[in-house]
Length: 65
Image (cartoon, rainbow, N blue to C red; front, side):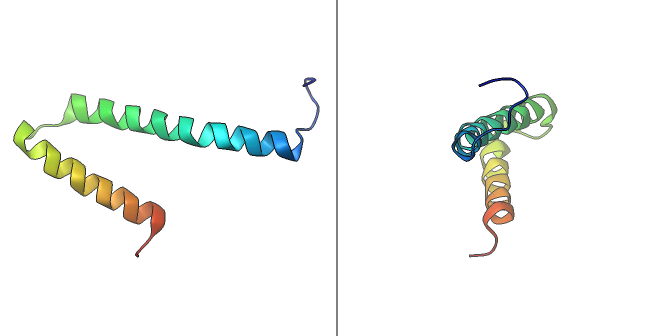
């Protein structure tokens, strides 16, 4: 691909297919770093907190089912 040229529709779809999971992984890593460095509760509470956050994120992303 030449620099400055417009991407084809196929290339745009490929880039989206590759970048969407990459971005999700980067967000997960960033969130884990926040949890690891700033979680101030008992580690016994961590699984319940993670389940709650997961449910909230799923609701935010998919909406009410």
